[in-house]
Amino acid sequence: MMKSADLVQEAATLTLREPQFSEDIRIGGIEGGGTHSTLVILDGKGAKLTEVKGPDTNHWTIGIDETAARLSAMIEQGKRTLDIPETVPLDCVGLTLSGCEEETTNRQIVGTLLKKYPQSAKDYVISSDTLGSLRTGLESGGIVLIAGTGSNALLINPDGTTHNCGGWGYMMGDEGGAYWIAHRACKYVFDDIDDFVKAPEPISYVWPAMRNYFNVTDRNAILPYMYKNFNKSTIAEFTMEVATGCDRGDPLCLKLFEEAGQLLAKHINAVSKKAHNDLKLAQGGLKVICVGSVWKSWKYMKNGFVNEIHDRHVVDELSLLRLTTSSALGACYLAAEKINCQFVKPYDSNVEIFFHYKRDRYPETQKEEHSVELKNHTDENHTDENHTGSSAPVHGNGEST
Image: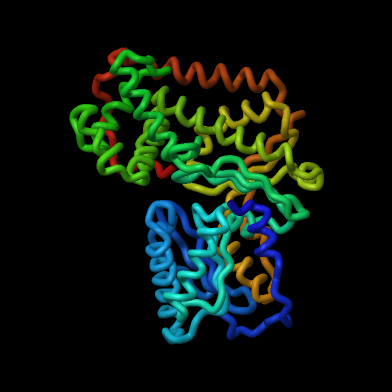
């Protein structure tokens, strides 16, 4: 298995060429996830020319040949929007894709693209989706924490050394991601009805929401979704209904997102132990780029997240940042470096801070107030003791997570 450090080193080891500045240069970058992908094409001065949306490109789920076919199709669509002839390849394309942490398969993807689709691009640089996100917003290093369908954390130090936590997929990890939240919600319901382990809060919202979402009347009818017709994204999207439950004050939904926040904080505690002091002592503390739709429900994760950070005494100060643009830009930056195409990268305008934590500004009394506030909120909504009873109607279009 190729270490993340090797991926970074490969991206940073450039073939010695004269710097290129021509506006005729066309550089692509693809951010690929387990649900969808995005292509951005820049010119040689870093100006954005077009953006293309595409399907998921995780080779572990669809195979290398299909991944290469989808990547090429996106590139060709982008070329058509710019009136680039089919026979003219892009100068270089950066691929920062979910599941691309292994050297062998990464080389197979690039090899397949160059052999089967030589018209798409002259060259490629490939790495994991975490690296693309980090390189979009931070120049000298930091942490990227992905919480989308799955979860993954990557630390890059100023000297290029890297450390990972998570990213092992739904069978071995993905804690705090949308699949984990949805699966845990379903597990609470199954165990509670069996009287095997009672859910920590009533299932009076989640169980009807499950029946509505999967269009079933009992638990047996849900099993095909989990086994025979399993689709990770279908399960993960149930998290939107859990977020809707949070909007309505449902105690179990609030508990699920609090648990997710705690687990995502554990990722940061794990990798921050290896962070250089330059990153920890920077203005605003350790920078963490937060990527993925689960972060849209930050207000429901905040207490669990902050309490975990505060209790472990690993991080004294940190800033959570969100990207204001597609992380496909980070893939473009890697491609530009591969061919030594130099332009100014607007890192500061690519991110914004949405939360800042500093230990000496978060006394224990404040933590206790947060816990009491959450408990009171839960008690106010703990009114239906019939766990399998009906609740208010579940809408199909809740707040996106």
